[in-house]
Image (tube, rainbow, N blue to C red; front, side, top):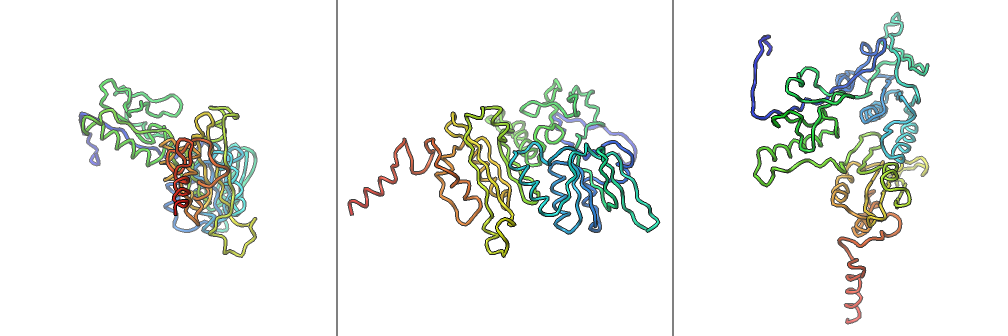
Amino acid sequence: ESSGEKSRVTAGKILIATGGRPVFPPGPGIAEHAISSDGFFELESLPKKAVVVGAGYIAVELAGVLNALGSEVHLVLRKNQALREFDEMIRNGLDVEMVRQGIVIHRDTNGVASIALDDHSANTNTKTVTMHSGDVITRADVVLMAVGRAPNVEYLNLQNANVATDDKKNYIVVDAYSNTTNPSQSVFALGDVCGVVELTPMAIAAGRRLADRLFGPVELQNIKASYENVPTVVFSHPTIGTIGLTEAQAVAQYGADDLQIYRSRFANLFYGIFDVEYDDKPKTSMKVICVKSKGEQVVGLHVIGMGSDEMLQGFGVAMKMGCTKADLDSCVAIHPTAAEELVTMGQWGTSPQVSGAVRNGSLSSVHAVDSAKSNM
């Protein structure tokens, strides 16, 4: 407590949801002269020159924000591209757009080696950033580290409660029901402290299911959160929405010959009235990955471009319900929108529709219209 005195709190059930925190890599001057994403929200003025280090959600989002506000932005990547775990279409599309918008990308640097203050004889507070590759960025006003996060578990004495953590990153080990390894089955954990799906809405969903299971009616005693097909959005510039398997993951799981992949790339109609050449207009790219042997079930859906965040929520529901390409085709397009591309893409799906005109292989509703016309 604030007085320095210790207190003991007991409970029949304990939930650990202490979240995570930004981490800094080792190296001279890095901890002293860099800020984290927390520090970003404490900035009182716009930096003229900003260095963002990292390749994940936070790095590309904050790089995009600073660039849009007018900062000269340098994005430092340990390898060749940002968002390396995302679908290739997403990675390439974002890379092209960031470069087009003026972000300077430093690739294959193997990370930052050191940060040093520049000569302050000119009353500046700028820094020099040196990468392991030898690349150097000078006179940076802000260096923002977004290289990863760690779970907040160090001071919890988890071993005293027989709560196990993994050997790699110290995440708490849990089962599908948020149970820890505590033998009494009265200690639970969820959210970023477990490292399963580190998204705030995922933690909220897991918390709601756990509360239902522990304190709800008997019919909810076996309820649990679903960690499959979790939709996620990156608020980069442009926005990214993705759910399910990447193309590489789908190939590894089903084989390339069992996949049918639909793609589209276009300039959003929002830019139709802009007096800009088509090639210079921001593009929207979409990919729908289907498995042939499962009736062209959609196992991956990826969008980068304006409005992808909003459209993904609805298509995420469809994927959770096991939709096929034909099911997408059965939905009439809403025009003019970008989302309509996902229900008008390529040739018709090959499987029977769950709803719509096609039933049991016959165009029943179309035949009904033709019959009505013939009797008039």
